[in-house]
Length: 324
Image 1 (cartoon, rainbow, N blue to C red):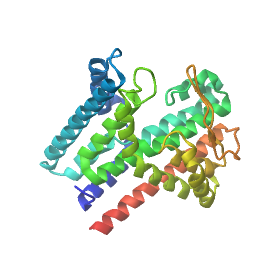
Image 2: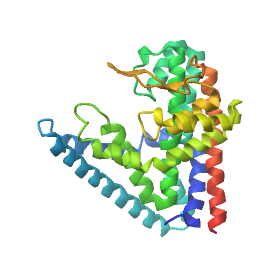
Image 3: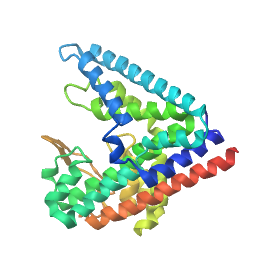
């Protein structure tokens, strides 16, 4: 299903459904979300195969094997689901509904907006609780500006790996590609970090996630730069900051949308931050920008994100016309 009209039309339907409906809590309280199923498999493999007493090379090999299992299960599930849905009437809509479940436009907006709203309803204590739901850093170490920067960085990074990347892999490979991407991305978030337990076992998941996000992250950065005027910013400046500073980020991919957002908003993002007891001493993206971010800047970032989502939908619609 390589970039043909049917896949792109379905993707357009999925983007529209996700934007309007999002992830209804009433549904997922009754039925486990597919990402929860993926997480349960990853956790089981981590428990069974990640032996702390094993040598590093053996743990890395076990992680490669675990990733292979995760990918095989995800691709098979996606292929079976797509084949079954294609046999039914109105498959453009039914596959679109399934694909929408694995997109995150609406839920990302809601969770980031909740941080801005928390300042007004409960002050900094409530904002810390809200931001703790979407970032891994220690919320108690964050002042108002730190909370706001964390929310903005999350909006930028997750626009890439929660919206653009799954859309990209669906357009290329249909539901199997989308399921595979979400499985790898979930594995990266669970085991792909540098803790003592997961440094070796999670190596394959982290590297695979980097590979799958190479193109989507750069596309996400370009979409953010184009949306800069929604935050009274300059696309040229956002592009310049992105090209100059994206490489400063410890991730080979997250720096692209985050640097573009920094340039669009005129803020300095990333920089030193604390995750529990660990201090990450990273350089700032757009270091000359303003560091005292405010709740108003979160709302500006959300306007940029909405515009970037519309830009993605416009590209998908144009693609449908071009390949028809």
